Amino acid sequence: MTFIQDRIDLLATATGLDGASMRIVICLLLSFPFSAVFKRLPDANYRLKNYYIIAVSSFYIFGILNLHSGFRTLLISAMGTYLLTRYLKTPLMPWINFVFVMSHLAFNHVHAQFFKVYDPTTIDITGAQMVLVMKLSAFGWNIHDARAQRKNKDLPLSSYLKSRVIEEHPGLVEFLGYTFFYPSLLTGPAFDFADYHKFIHSTLFDDLPDNKKPGRTRKRKIPKSGRVALRKVAQGIFWAAVWIKIGDYVTVEDALDPVFKYERSFVYKVLYLWILGFTYRLKYYAVWLIAEAGCIVCGIGYNGYDAKTGTILWNRVQNVDPYAFETGQNVHVCLEAWNQNTNKWLKNYVYMRVVRPGKKPGFKSSLFTFLTSAFWHGTRPGYYMAFACGAFLQSCQRLYRRNFRPIFLEADGKTAKPSKVYYDIVCYFVTQLAFGYVVHPFVILDIERSLYLWGTVHYYFHAMVAVTYFVFMGPFKKQVTDFLKQFQASANAKATPKTAVLKDESEEPVMVLPDTEVFLNIGEVKEGMDELRDQFQTMKRRGSLVESGVLEDAYKNFSEEVSSFFPKKD
Image (cartoon, rainbow, N blue to C red):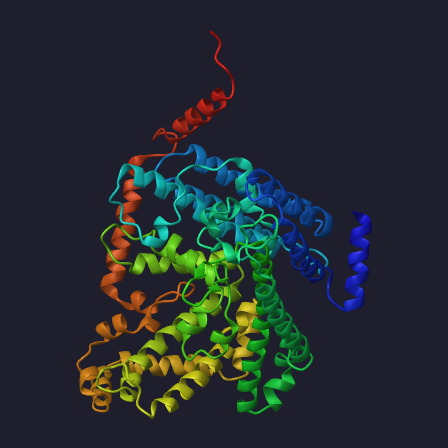
C-alpha cells in the first residue's frame, strides 16, 4: 500500500492538487472501470455483487485513501444502525437511531474543529459520514414504517414513503454493500435502501423492454449508459476547469485584503463577491456530477423507461442541476437544484416526521429541520450565519413575490404580461447577488472574518432585510399592500397571501433553510412549544429505556436470533 501512496503523492505534486483532493479524484475516476466490471457480474448472483461492492470500497479506503480510522468511524455508525433497527422494536427506534448517528457525527465534527490539526494530505472522514447519516437515518424510518404498516394498514404514509418501506430486515452483507457503496462512498449521492435492494436484485430494470437490454449471447438487465455518464463527466470536467481558471483571479484572500475594502468601489465589491460565491459552487458541481456519472454507469442511476419517447431516464440519484441554480430567479428554484438528495432526506425523514398525525408542519417541524440541517453540516459558526441569512433571504423573497408578481400577471394569475420579462430579469439579479452575499460564511466558517467580509459592502443585505420587514410587516403594512393591489389584476387582488402561498409552489419552504414566517407567528410558536413540552412529559412518564423494558426486549430478540443458528438438542 505504501507504493500506491507514494505514487499518488507524486501525481498530486505534478498536478498541483493537494493529496486529499487527488485521492478523491482517483476514487471518482476508478469508479468507471469498476462499474463496467460490476455490470457484467451475473444478475442473479446477489451475494457476489454485494461482496464486489464491499471489496472495491475496501480498496478505496485502505489502498488509496489510507483511512484506517475513517473506516472505523463509518463502521461504528453502520453497525450501530444495523443492530438498533434489527433488535430494537419500539416505536422510538427511528428516533433512537437518529440520535445515535447524529451524535456520532457531531462528535467527529467537534473533534475536527477543536482537536484535529489540518493536514491537506488527509481526507476528513466527516464528509463521507454526512452521506452515511442520511442513508442510515432513512433506513431506520423505512424499517419502522414497514412494522407500523403491518399493525395499521391505514397508516397515513405518502406514496413516496410507501415505496421506501423495508418489509424484511436485510442480511449483514447486503446492508454493508448499501452503506459502503463505492461510487458514492465519499461525496454522495445518498439514496434509500429500497433503491439499492431493487438495484442489486435487478428488479429496478423490470420495465425495460428486451430490445433495450444489452448483450448478444446473454441479455443483461442493466442497460447501457456510457454516453449519458460521459456527458455528466464532461459537465463535471467543464465546471472543474472553470473553477481552476477563475480561481486564479478571484479568491477569498483578495476579498479579505484591506485594498479590497478601502480602494474598490461598492459596485465592484458586490460583483466580486457574486463571482466569488459562484466559484464556491463549481467544485461541488464537478464532484457531484462525476459521482453521479459513476452511479449511472453501474446502473443505480436508472429511473425508468419512457415508452412514449423510447428514452431511458437516468436521474434517480441526481444531486445537482447547475443550469437551474445559475439561472434561478428565486431562492426556492436555486436551492431545489442544489444538494437535492439532502433536501429529500430533510423533508421525508426530518420535517414530516416531527408532525403529529392529522396536523400540518409548523414551528416544531421548521425548528427541528433547521437545527438538523445546520448541525449535520457542522459545528462551525459560519454555517449558522449562512443559514440564518438564507432564511431571511427566503422570507424577503416571498414578501416581494406575493406583492409584486401579481402585477405582471393577467387576471387568471397564470398568464404573464409582456412586462413580466423585466420582473424576471430583476428577480434573477437580486437572487444571484443575494446568494453572492449570503454564502461566504459557509466557506470562511470563522465569525470574525465573515463579518469583516460582509462589512466590506456595508452589510447591505442586512440593511435591505430590515427595510423589507419594516415595509411589509411594520406599522404601514396594510397601506403598502393596498397600494400595490391597485396595480394587480382583479383576480389576483382578491387572493390573500395565504392562498397565494398555496398556489405558488416557489413559496414552499426549502428544507435546508428555516421558515422565518413560522418563527414570527406567535400563535404557531406557542403551539409548537406546548407540543414539545407535552412530548417531554410523555417521555418522562415512559421512563428510561431500561425501565420501559425496551432493552430487555432487544436482548430477547437478539438471543432468539442467535439461538436459531444452533440446532436444539433432544
